[in-house]
Image (cartoon, rainbow, N blue to C red; front, side, top):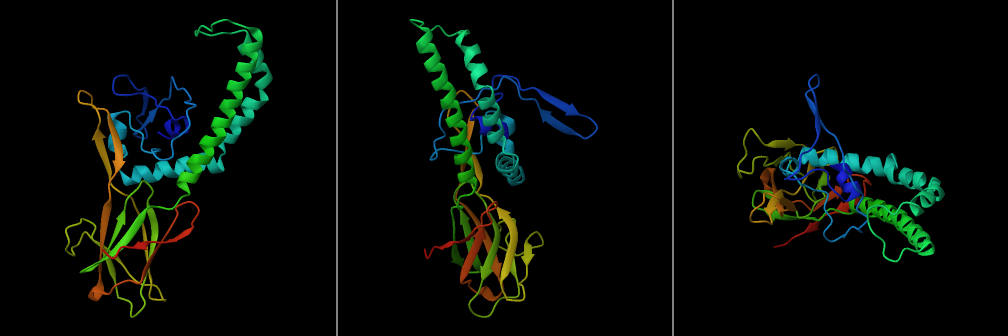
Length: 273
């Protein structure tokens, strides 16, 4: 899943088999990547998604907030900490001369019209340099996406307040502030039934009277079928509301969240309507 995002490609689909290894001791299933190619096409930031799902398996997994959190964390770690793009670029640059010599003598399966050694050499070097540029851009765009602000807002509700999340990135560690007297508790309507019951989650204030909602909230992922005769779905985020009950219906003055990776603070937009 992470590898598909890094390469902007896919491994397996609805009409081809996917190779897996079953670990009977741990109960884990490991996907074996094969026949991978790197798609040099530049990522479109407007349509870029981390929720790639070319199979029913990923269609189901990408609707799980636990899976999404693990995927985001691994993706950020391998790019930012393990520097996977930097290592690949360094390896390629180290073999550039040998690669160009080899590639000049191997035309491959694609017929080149009017073969000319000079043209081949210049085209090969241009293709190689374009690949390096693509890897650098891919790294920058994915990191910029993960480090961007989540698209979220909040509004008052007769029993407390609602938080709305619109896009792919979650909100984390929500801080709820009050201007006047703080309530004794805030409750997340966990099962969204608009009443307080035993399934809901309770939160209590700190010494300053503010609340830290130590949760990560994702927008719902909705599978959409683009093809009549195929089960090939794409995942789109839905505008998702989370309801919080507040003791005595006291209204907050500000809601603050943080980017999951940079820890940058963001004051959520208040929606009067």
